[in-house]
Image (cartoon, protein in one colour):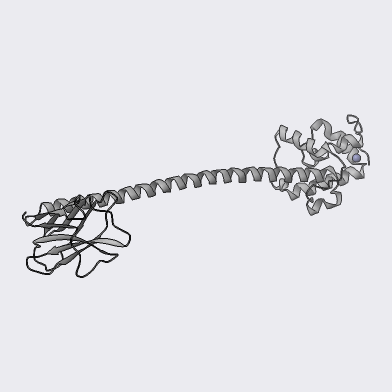
Length: 285
Ligand SMILES: [Zn+2]
């Protein structure tokens, strides 16, 4: 059985075991091949190792992708394969079924090492993905809050622009009438102006009005000469007693001669007020 061709000296079993992996992967050094094969021919244990190695090789798909491993990788792989030979591995993952008969050999360890390397690489990749994802999420969250803020600012700007356009329209209307409002007994600091246009609507501004008690609202009254007051709607004021609003002229009503503001029960006000006006003004004065 032994093949002795003169140039190859017989190899010890321990030396041969270290070359089993390289031989099975077909990356054994040319200078070592003869001596290894000579030992292999007479050593059943090494024959079984080689068979097991090839089974693992098939299992991890190397046989379908023949390649020359980089020298450094090969050295590392061999080092891992031979680092702890013959040691039972209680914590290592189970080897592939094909390698089961020799699972306690260093090939079992190589398979275990390969799967650990793969697991670590997978974890590192997943971890980098998670990091990217959390960065992307943070970016997205910051971007959407910026968008939300811009949207609010745009909405505010649109409302301000709409109010301004409305104001300019009403104040520039050919039929515009301005009514100056004066605060009455309980609201001497209150001032206001109402701009009325039958075609373009009503613009109303106040300042210095008393802050409303809870549950109360102010109600605007448009009063044509000699007629019943018509509600122009209810409103509240800010902490400085100011408000600025515009509305349509109630349909079909004649131009008011008097404008008044009363304080009423909220939130909808009343149809006919029984209260003294907080502010009042007359057109043309
Ligand atoms: Zn041997």
